[in-house]
Image (cartoon, rainbow, N blue to C red):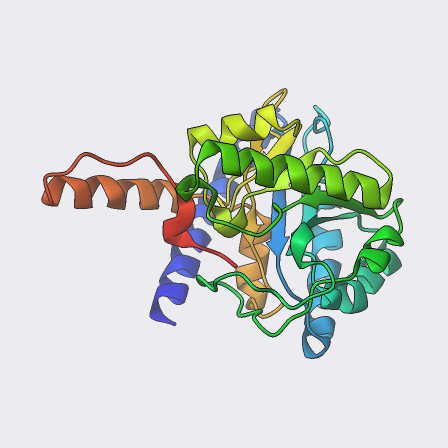
Length: 286
């Protein structure tokens, strides 16, 4: 709880700083550039549906919704947001998609293909405790409304990709994409890293496997560069406090990756070890 409050307070200061910067730009006749935050959910249970609906109302009031596969943001500025879900749980179809459809908000579902129609079988490493949740069936996945839902891959078996060999990683990446394309009968070119874990080798494997964009669990602004391949996301849940959600939606948690990197360097220096390449398994998500 104390850590959560500290994160919120730091993010609030970032948001205040953003407001002062944007206000100064407007005073000098400048238009702040466009920003987009990609929200990453896992589960929306029946008791959480009302809270999720309120969050979507806040999203519509504060930003314009876009699909996670959008090529570029408009040049004239503005705030945008994309909604994504990892793992492909049934409760997303039951509780989240109806609320999104009611508000015409597009969504991307990242699916673990070998878990379709079964309870999640991968190791729990933090984040939402979804060990009792069931993944949607193949039939359900094939009948999702294509005008609202984009399907992306979340691997075949949800491994920690930096810890397996490149050959196995490519099998996970290619196998899941090909299976999903067969089920939904359309191209699948988006991928999100299981547990948020990645390194340069995994990113290169994603390129080799034919993906057009991959998503991390780093809460950075997304779609800010032409041809952007690696995009950040802000981990989100219906249980977020209202202020917490608004700050995530504003991109105010984007300081966290820098804090994680600094912590790694300090610990490496204290222990006299070379720093390993970044793998976000340390801030693991389900």
